[in-house]
Image (cartoon, rainbow, N blue to C red; front, side, top):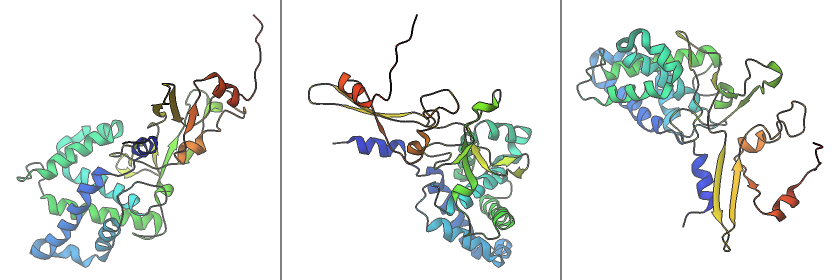
Length: 271
């Protein structure tokens, strides 16, 4: 039988199905470079093997303390541009900005095609070129291709308010990405160059799991960022974000006894 804990784990699942498909493609491209003379030059760049090994040793989870998600996110986007960027032309960047996972679907479809009809240079060369771009990006930004950085350094969620700056909640490093149940998509490119940070402005901001007690009473638990007060400076304005980050759930109070037990303060409002 499924438990509440099982369902809560599903909602917080950071496994990247995109990585499960892209990482083997990267290894296949390096293997192919040993077999195809025109690709052999890529093997002189030892950084490519280190990046692929980093991703192969990874559990494919887009989590803050992992190193590999940074390399994978870069590789995914460079490969997408190498694969379908020329076919989509001027539409590539606007669509990628609007819905990154939409572009990734096109990328995977193009890469799966045995005829490689959309990949002029061939899938292996496109992947190898993307690996070179990834190596240059990682080395330029972090000084190394497989250490010295984590997903927390690259990815954050921004609780922004464009119209009312006093309500801007700032940025916090978060788990998740495109292609996860714990979705947290953002822009990798800023124009043609990688953005300063991969920032999500949306995602799973309200999770609930529920069951029933033996007597039929509903029992639900919630997980959400920010707080229950809309007033900056109030102690309940941003008190729930830490629990949201760490996937800690709180009882949603249905019964009178639960409500009374959880009451912090009360007041009667005059008409």
